[in-house]
Image (cartoon, rainbow, N blue to C red; front, side, top):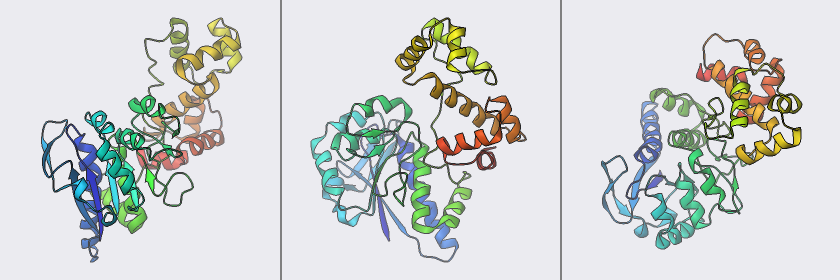
Length: 327
């Protein structure tokens, strides 16, 4: 049997803990339904055994103190996020224990802002990592980490598009996607699909899928000239959104507009247009009955093949597959 342990601490986000662990618990139930032995033993670890208050106000109960656990006995160790994450980033004994545990556990992962705890320990140095979109800037303060804030998780059992040993996931429910990916790696896709169905979930959002995007509702604090342009772009996706056309509309030179985009949005106009159209296409595909061709036309991709290439580039799925999963 494989022991899956999750760290808890004061003001931890409860769903970061219970969501992933429920996936493993449900996998045990599905194993038993299929006449197989359950695979996972679940443990909560804290500074000391006993109740720990979550940020939701209720308590979770840790069975063991993490310092008393032999990491070699753990298969998977998960580090959740929460309001109390900042204090744990400045907890030298915990960070030392994580560094000692890393080479001994098969898998070490984080959920949500738990990535900041792993970052503080140095275990994400030289690795690709993600976290909740609101904490991406804080994660980028760690210069040795390759931060990809536009994906759900960085776990890949084959090591092609992520890491099979140390990995991270985005906000809250992305931890459930991560847990499903771990179950699929352990027990196969059919059983992971059974777990997802039992939990009334889709199986499973790819790790490379983008997080929530606010592109369609631009931040009102932007420079007025840029805000007006962003609002117009979101309403005119099928129009000419080339750099030259946008610069003319904003009454700026192409170079000035590009500089303004990078300064305020962290990306150039071309990349912003691609992500804006992609986000709109995602929303349209989630509406049952919208054809791929219609989506491509309405969002400015013009041809379904252009839409397909962009979906594979950013979400690692085809538009048709995305529509079947989420419509």
